[in-house]
Amino acid sequence: MNERRQSWLPDAAAGVGVLCFGIAEAWAAQADTETRVLMLGLAVAVAVTASLSRQMPSVALALVWAIGAWQLVSETQMMFVELALISVAFGTARWGTVPTVIAGGASIPAGTGITLFALTNFDYGARALIRVRPKLFEAFYSIGDTWLAGVTVVAIAFLGLPWVAGLALRFAARARDSRARQVAAEEQAAQAVRAGDQAREIAGLREEQARLARDVHDAVGHSLAVILAQAESAQYLGDDPDRLRTTMANIATSARSSLQDVRQVLSPGQHPPQSPRAIEALIAGVRSSGHEVVLRELGTPQPLPPDLEVVVYRVVQEMLTNAVKHGDRDEPVFVELHWPDGAFAGELLIEVRNAVPLPASQGSQTAPIAVAGSVAGLGLHGMRQRLSAAGGRLDARLREGLDGQGTTFSASAWVPVTSRQEVR
Image (cartoon, rainbow, N blue to C red; front, side, top):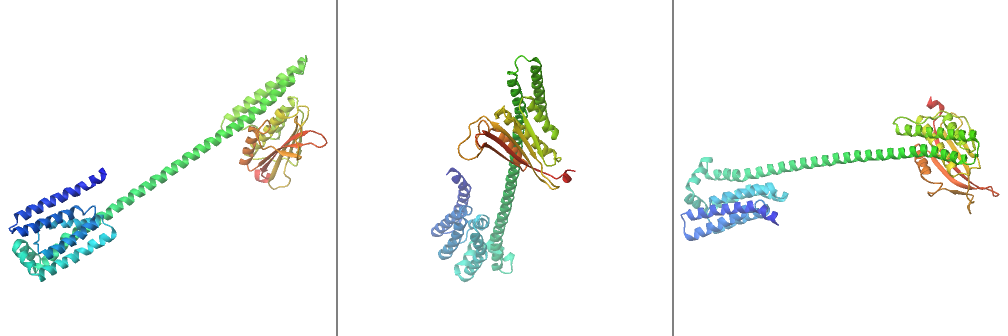
């Protein structure tokens, strides 16, 4: 409410100024009391109209026409204070609606024509102009060949120029608003780009964090599982110093391998050694812990791109870790690598099976691992993420054996590989 009142203060002040000027003009006029009263009324009407020219230009335009009609009917003489009505012409073009702008522009020639018609066809018009404003009448003569031409030029100049000025300022304000909106839109777009870049950066950092967690889990988890198995086997060696020394040496080797893997994971740009021999080294480490591992390769091994070599290495490493941690120590672990045949790209199937010391489940012959637990934990989740990023897939399930043969945990991974020609 206070802001609205403050917006009206300049208009009210302008109206008071116009009113004071009109009162002074009416008081100084050489006229009778009735004429002065009419002049005071005209001054009040002009002051109100001028004060409404900015906030309510359409109402002010209507009041201009009402004042003109009343002045003709009451035969009130012209006053200098009426020059304040040029603010209405400016206001309609600057702040009015589109219909008000059009009406304001059309009122200039229309009002001029009506005024000229009244001055030439009503007795009071020319006589009043000559009697009250003889010098102004002479000035009109100096502009054109006749006083009517002078009135026409003056009226159009006094009303048309403010209307054109208001229209120019209106368009200038629209141009500024358009530029401001464009700048705001560009700033919002820039903020959106920055937010998108920041979101992508955060996503990249989180992805790198998840990758690092998977690599550390795979490397350290495998080594710790092997070390734990070797330490447990040492409990049953009795007083055999040679076998104890061999077991301790295997534990030290596994620990050194774990430290090396951690350094490689934490060092950017470095990867663990990947090759068929690297997988054989993993299997040898598990065998050294006392677990029997049976490796079987089907098809012709082929070189892999470095990123896929990392995937294959980590998947085999995690599968062996799960077999050591959760498998039956007295049963062998079976590792099978099914290489695709032919010259075209296909899928490498990695399958690891191990017996688990769990009672056979009731129901179907196979039960997929779908919940986190002693078997399905962070390792399987990490393998799925790693394989999914490479376009592969993972299947892990418990298989109930037939004829009381026990339960087997089977993990199968499919890794898309390229042909040998493409690698070369």
